[in-house]
Image 1 (tube, protein in one colour):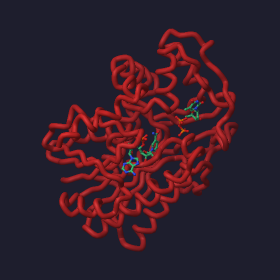
Image 2: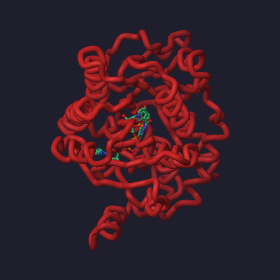
Image 3: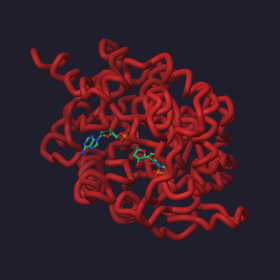
Image 4: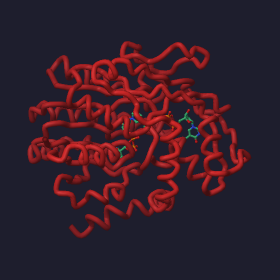
Length: 339
Ligand code: NAD
Ligand code: TYD
C-alpha cells in the first residue's frame, strides 16, 4: 500500500512513520510537510535513503500541487497529522491555525475524493471536547461528549473534525477520526510541557508552570498513539470517531516535579507564572470504544515512558540543541539545496 502521511517531520508524524515502515515492510510512505518552525527534517534523516520512503516539501493548503502529488503517487491511504499544534501560539495569533488546520484538511479531503482514495484518517485531539472539572474524577470524554472548545487551536481542530464528518456523509469519503490525549516521547518539540521542562532543567533554567500547576492532562506514550492509528486505518469502521487515551491523568506540577527529581535538580527551579488565557482544567479520555472494537490498550506505563523520554533527550542532545540554536532550519537547504 501507498500512504501519504502529512506533518511527518513533526513529533507524532515522525514517530508514526518510523513505527509504520518497520511494521509494514511492503508499504511505502510519502511524507508531505511544509517544514514550519515545528517541522524538523533532520528527524527523518535515518530513512531519507529508504526506497520505501519519500519526502515532499509541500503546504497542505496548496491545492494545485496537492492534486498533482495525488495524481503522481496514487495513494491508497492518507493520514493527516499536519497542523499548527501549540495552544499558546494559537492564543497569540489564530489565523494560521484556521488556514492549516481547517482549509488544509478540506484540500486533502477534496484530493481524496478526486482521486478515489480508500481511506482518509484525521488525527484529532481530545481538546475538541473542551475541559472537565478537576473535582469530578468520575467524568471522562467519550465519543458522545459534545464538542465544546476553548482555544483557537481546539476550535480549529473541531472545525476540521466537523468537516471530515460532513465529507463522509455528503460525499461518502471513507474517513475516520482519532481524538487522542496529550502525547509524550522522542522528537517532541521543546515548546511543549514535558520536553521544555527537561531541556530547561538540563540548562538549570527556570521551569515556568502556568497558574498553580493544578491543571490535569491524560498522558500517552507516542508509540501507543501510533499503534492506535495503525489499527484504526486497518480495522476501524468508516465514519467513526475513536478516542485514544491512557487513563494516565497527572497534574502539571507533579509532572514537573517528577522531571526535576529524575534529573537530580532542585525544585527551586520551579517558577509559577501567569496562567494561560482560557486554560483548560482537565482532560481525561474514556478509551472503551477503541479497546472493545479494536483491542487497543496503552502498552507503555507512564513511569516507564517518562524514563524512556528523559533518557532519549539526554542521549539526543544534538537534536534539541539544533532546535534551540535554530540550526535545524538549515537542514532542508543542506539536503535539497543542490537538487
Ligand atoms: P507538531 O507541531 O510537532 O508537527 C506538526 C507538523 O505539521 C510539522 O512537521 C509541521 O511542519 C507540519 N505542518 C504544519 N503546517 C503545515 C502545512 N500547512 N502543510 C504541511 N505541513 C504542515 O505536531 P504534533 O504534536 O506532532 O501533532 C500532530 C497531530 O496530532 C496534530 O494534528 C495535532 O493536532 C494532533 N494531536 C497532537 C497531540 C499532542 O499531544 N502533541 C495530541 C493529540 C492530537
Ligand atoms: P502543552 O504541552 O502546551 O499541551 P496542551 O496545552 O495541548 O495540553 O501544555 C500541557 C499543560 O502544561 C497545559 O496545562 C499547559 C501547561 N504548561 C505549563 O504549565 N508551562 C509551560 O511552559 C507549558 C508549555 C505548558
